[in-house]
Length: 297
Image 1 (spheres, rainbow, N blue to C red):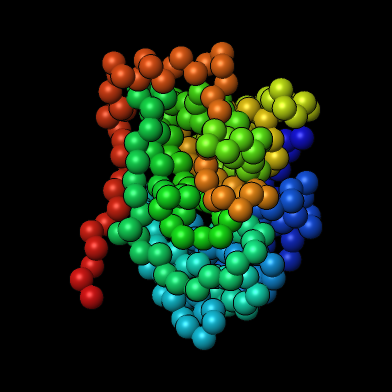
Image 2: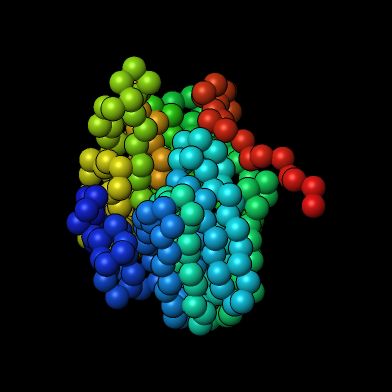
């Protein structure tokens, strides 16, 4: 059953958001949000999961397996692509920030221990999906075909105010080789202030409906900055940004299959929308930003 976790309701210890299989109705995926004050540091054990440290706001240093990876980060999720750090299972990780910030820890239970490493911002592919009012931007920092991990898949999506994303509704809750993956998913949201009123409390909306494969309760949630939605199964979408308020969400996915792939099935009632995009242009407001050029070493 899908679950809406409003901001402030799923914190634990140092984390303002702490979603793990031990604390949530998920078996594979994890997401934590770690705020650090200036000079702050936090150490955690990766256990049986692989993790990516992703700056939401601010810079940090990540120490793992005897190496320190310096992340330049960003001012906020609406200002640019960020670099990130990958930490393997069975490791100890320390995140430290001179100036403070907020950092997402994206995790997935896994079987193989890979090497710790830095993911440069210049290597993050920025993709435009959809067209017209269904246009959105996807930052493929840990997409299945973009970054090497064992089970973890994670991307960022930016939806201009007034647009729909995660559309057409789709699902990935059945293992059908070459057609669909079995992946549970976490959505984490941040909503931008309106240009005319930066202090305005923006909202968005997230819809989830049961699939034929796994019947359950549906969800229509009003989401705000700091909220999360857990999607163990079902058709999900649209994700709707209110006019005037750009919407960001971080998607973290993982599943039981050894084949790390994102294969989806569109809802049969709405799949027709893709053909209409052939005659439409992407929203001219996109991309909100591009990846920076590679810095020569």
